Length: 229
Image (cartoon, rainbow, N blue to C red; front, side):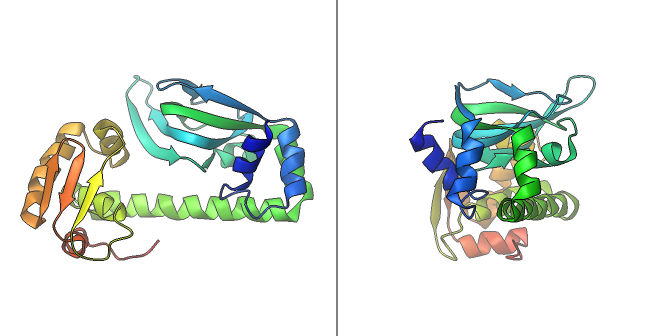
């Protein structure tokens, strides 16, 4: 692993509070892959051989049924580490990972990582915090699916993207494919489009990937966003 990649790895949420010497040891056996859009990083049911840390780009975690139907379960952004539970449990991957745009991914071998977790309290604490963050994300997604309509889920997703704006207008330029966003929200692309049109009643306008919001506070109120993270 190059020094620049090692530095980027050390700034990710899972590793930024881990002592540098521990990261250096993990980096000895690690390497970085650059993969194009559409590449399959690993397959559902496969053996968990690496912790994958996304240094640049986006990847989708994809679940599949036995008949081949797929759904994007989560979209991982730069800085994300995945899938740690499979490594800790020495269990197969529950999902596949597909590259959504050209990405650079650090691959940390599972065996050395497990040994380091056994020996290094700082690393285990960092892993526990990383798992806790994703647990809360998962709970929020379950709540969205069970408690919100499709229109409200779209509104909540858009309002989440406006974290820096408490009230008033906002403009979003979505850098993700609508199909991936819709799948993450448990919707078809057609349902996404219908919901966007429905949200015109609360001041949402769209033109391609550009979304204009008249009042973020009004959108959050419509979605029932409670501010819990």
